[in-house]
Image (cartoon, rainbow, N blue to C red; front, side):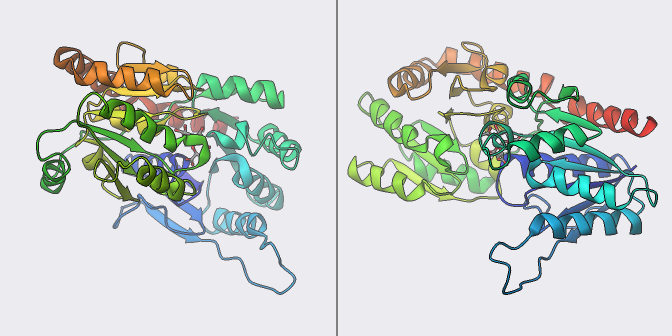
Length: 374
Ligand code: GMT
């Protein structure tokens, strides 16, 4: 198949899923055309069967808001014709799904083009539900040839908020390969915890919805019991607030801000426990990545997280904002080596058994084939 993939190319789970899906499909012999304003960040080096098409939005004095969605739609239509695309897979509804819809309409009678939309999270729960975008998000869902959501939670939210006329298929996020801990990461572990202090890891884009400040409050509580380190991977709007809080609580020696990083798996693997206290999380790809590295997860019970992190089996769940419960869970894990080992094994096994690309990619391929056969 010849597949166009449109996504946000910067840091964020939807772009990661879209990119890794493209890589997996290309490895299976499909031709993949990424269409976006920048090269997706997990696309390093050359990949056979993968092509990138940059969307440029011309500047013009009238454009206070450059019309990216229109430039994207035009590029999608151009590429669909030049490369004879069978379908466009839009990741994150706004604006990718509506741009794909416009491309398909522009090509009506010229070139048949199908649209698959994958809903990832705040395109439904936050941004898409905002009155400024609600009707167009609903329209783009209804106009897609098939729609997927990354969890049952997100599917239910979509049904409640948008009453779609299309069925929504749940296809979970996935991980790809076995994780290797690099020598640099082993070195980092020694540096971070020279005396063997346990390490809590958090990975996110530091948006308010991730509640990154809670990771610091939880660490403070654990630290009252024994020395511990917190490693924060990622960057975003709440980073300055988090840095201030660390200073205020005099935790500078115990908390490390690594910023945006490429070798996510290698870094996750230095940790002892993964902490994700999100306010809302449609799936929680970062937690899945941590599970695949064998990290027990302590997460909030928000959104789709309970579909991934099984309470008492792969880690623990706690109510959003309950930093006491989260720190109690972490203390329990870190002071009980047998429990930690059991949770670690369960987390790794669950990631591999239910969320590996070998299980998930065929679901996307099957969906594409069904749509193209209609
Ligand atoms: O919805 C967002 O905030 C953006 C999106 C992203 O690009 O990071 O994240 C969502 O998509 C991920 C991949 O499907 C999910 O694993 C995340 O749970 C989800 N984020 C939220 O729901 C907050």
